[in-house]
Every structure is written in structure tokens, then in C-alpha cells.
Amino acid sequence: MTGIYEYSLIRAPLAISCPACAAEAVFRTSHDHALPVLRRDRHFDPPREDWSGEVRCLSCTKAGPHQLDWPGDAYYRVEYEGQALWALDRPMLLAFREFIAAGADRAQVRPDYKMYFLRIPTVFLTARARAPMLKQIDRLLSGSR
Image (cartoon, rainbow, N blue to C red; front, side, top):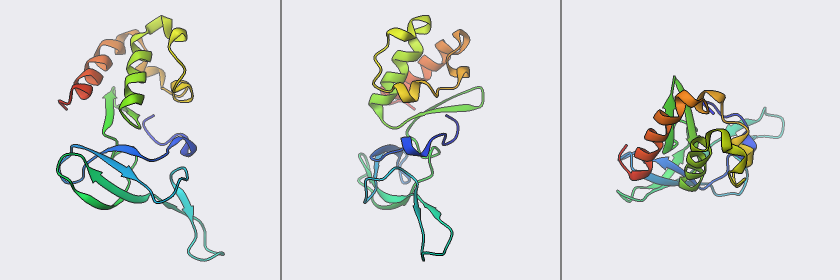
């Protein structure tokens, strides 16, 4: 999940880092399509990716247009061995935490985010990664980045 592995899985609203204060902000689009939207200026032009939308900060009240840089803008993002694991929002990160903490009992974890669980790189799921990953996730969930 270091890069964008499946465009069809990225749907707004997303929890992103506020461009002004780095606190949690909400990114929304003006449509309900998966990101990025492929746009054409004219019917014969090649399609271009459109990651535009609006950001609203929950802390500094910044609001306005924003060009999303996903997963770089992801608020719920942790790193381990040079790779980043990102979540779209807090509930998804909580589900990832439960999945990582389950270790060998992962089959018992509820399948709310099953499509994402299947794509988590194994570097995040090893026994050696479990403690550092859970520590980072817990720190992020507690609000201390």
C-alpha cells in the first residue's frame, strides 16, 4: 500500500493532513466517482487524472479547493521498513490495527475491509513488524503524531 494499488478503492471523503496545520482534515470531491477521475478537455484528448476536490480542516478551519496527493496526503499513515500503510479514515485504521494484532488468528477478524486486508503487503504482517506497527498505529489513534 505504498502506492495507489487499486484506483477503484479510493473514494471520498478521505481523512487527510491539513495543508495549513497538518491536523486531520476531510477531503471531498464534487462527485461520487472513484479517484482519480479520468477527464478529457476535448473528446480527442488523452485522458488525464483529476484528483481535485475540497479540503475542510477540523482544527484550523481551513476550507477551499485542494489537489489531492494520495497517499502522500493521507492522515492515517504509518511507515515500516521504508513502506507506508495508509487508511482512508479512522475506522479503516482501527480495522487494520485489529487485523495486524490478530497475528495467526487473522481469519477471525471481521471482514469490513476485506478487500484492503488482502492487499496489505506482508512486510506489515510479520511477527517482527507487529509490535512497531501497533505502537505507531496507537500513537496515531491517540492524536500524537
